[in-house]
Length: 399
Image (cartoon, rainbow, N blue to C red; front, top):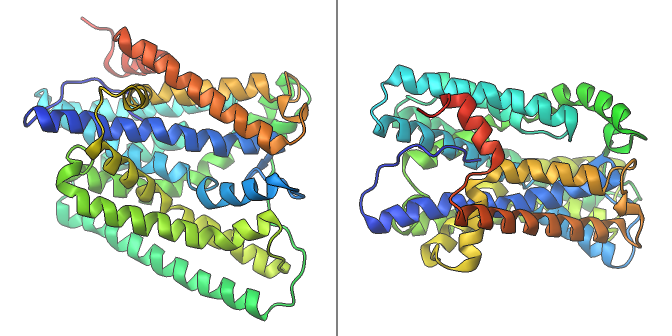
């Protein structure tokens, strides 16, 4: 998420436009993926959100959610978080801040993100990522930020090892499916107490217990954020036209790996593939491991779009405006889930025929609302409310 508005360096008008557009476009679009993933979890009070007995159109929706959304949204967040960390440090450097001052700003900002995460989880939604972002940001600032290009190549080695792991697990899944005798084992989905709590106080107490464990489970995304840091050091999204070939290959290979790796779990979730418990467990593992490749894949797609797009276009401009206010957009979604979907509020997910369809319609509507609100704020040259608060806490009052 991008929340800083410190001065930027430029190399000319063309690069200035690209530099502002591609990262903001990616952040704005990724919030739709996050909304679709989170709303399913809220509707079904589980992780991942899954209708275990789908019928009709719900089968296809389950399939698409597992192929394109579940475990494929947070890696986009992670890539953009690592990218944004380097951008923020670069802007501070360009403003003349000494290294100690830059490190202090980053540490303070990420420490406040941990606080944001705790408050977000306590008041709104257990599946908070801000706290983990803050912890990872502190580690990256202290350990990775000022390292050499040679050191940062370790991130590429780790991704190569992850690709090898995915291939091995994929081979095991295929072998287990082909050698198995069928079955009717479902994919595992952990129940989330706070999402099914009968009242707000009970939900808040549950979230206070769930947030630390959830935060620990997402801390390993530092490997994904590290790739974003590597990309930012090369200004890949600021200068997408110069990296068009790399972006194309990343989009094809990243999304290809995510879709191929998610296929067995997607087929099982749709009820189109019947497997035993062992194969179902391995399919779920493969789905999770392959999901990380969707992060750079989706980000590369957004970068390619930025090569051809213009901020003056209404759609791209609105998405970019949301990207500049992505923290506010993310928190707005959690407020919407609490009001629209919680069992003790409107509980709209259970009021119509298909909870899956209802949830997805609500997710798109909420995301579109944030796009329109961000567009109006952009016209007035106003940041989002969460960005205002985080900036004030990070830099202090304006003088």
